[in-house]
Amino acid sequence: MEYPELTLAHMVRLTDDTGIIQHAKYHLPNRATGYTTDDNARALLTAVEAYQATGNEEALQLAEVYLAFLHYAQLPSGRFHNFMHYDRTWADKVGSQDAFGRAVWALGGTAAALPGKGGGALARELFLRALPWTVRLKALRAQAFSLLGLVEYLGAYAEPPVKSAAATLAQKLVAAYHREASQDWAWFEDRLTYSNGVLPGALLAAYRRLGGHELLEVGERALAFLTDVLWRGHYFKLVGCHGWYIKGGEPAAWDEQPEDAGCLVLAYSEAYRATGSAMYKKRAEAAFEWFLGRNARGEPLYDPATGGCHDGLTATGVNANQGAESLLAFLLSGVRYQLPEVFLKPAKQG
Image 1 (cartoon, rainbow, N blue to C red):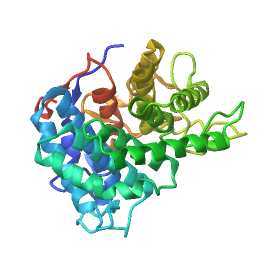
Image 2: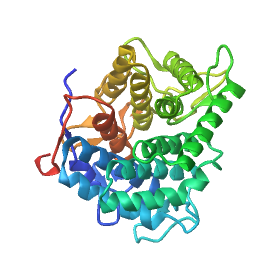
Image 3: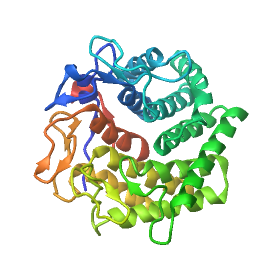
Image 4: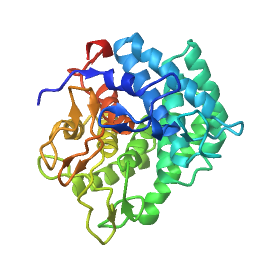
């Protein structure tokens, strides 16, 4: 399959001087929906990875906007707001655990990627302020997102408290797997919902940094189970968000979400990094190609005319809107986890 050039055009379109706007109406920013820490964390990680991969100064400028948003979002306690109205007032007292985890992931990655720069220094401050909360998280995906951030941070700063927190979170995920897994259900909980690939993916990333055969073993077993559920011989059929997949039931058919495809790319890419198995690289490519039409409807979600990504795959076709979460799932997959043929061009050329 021929891959498109990646462009920052839609990222720029959705971004103002506050941050990236959460949703779009068709390809235009839907300002009434405001902003979230969830999306600005995703955007920060994507922009930093794009800058690392290409040296694109436009990506670095975008990263500074998203980092400033997270700085404003962080509470004195170290936790974060999540939802912000378009008038820059907060819609919550404190955000979700998932939003916290994504912020930690983005800040850990930014601190490691930009050492010696002001942005890297600020990201490190925010990361360390949030660190004590990571081991208190109860939500599994929040633990996994946070673990990815701790692993990223340890790539640049080998600090014992961070390594200890990473080991604690990894063991919490392993313990969840052992509590729930059975011969015919090798998973961390009794259902498959959203961002599923991040659970085995985080363990496989942690294995590369921390070692420990159990992290590799559980990560690979869970990923094999997820593959059995989703793989249809030539393409991935993701679990639909209208009902999910409850143990003992049937997977919901629609709507398939780009975030889930992005987390699959993450999981297979981390498995490839951990083991060197070419099978995982091929699976990562297949997961990425879900965005390009290798899916149940044979319809691409990526829109080369706008540089955006449609918000879901439904029973009747793609969702017409092109919001931030979908775009960032696509861009991060393309820029960070693969492939040498894919490169970023400036938005002005998009």
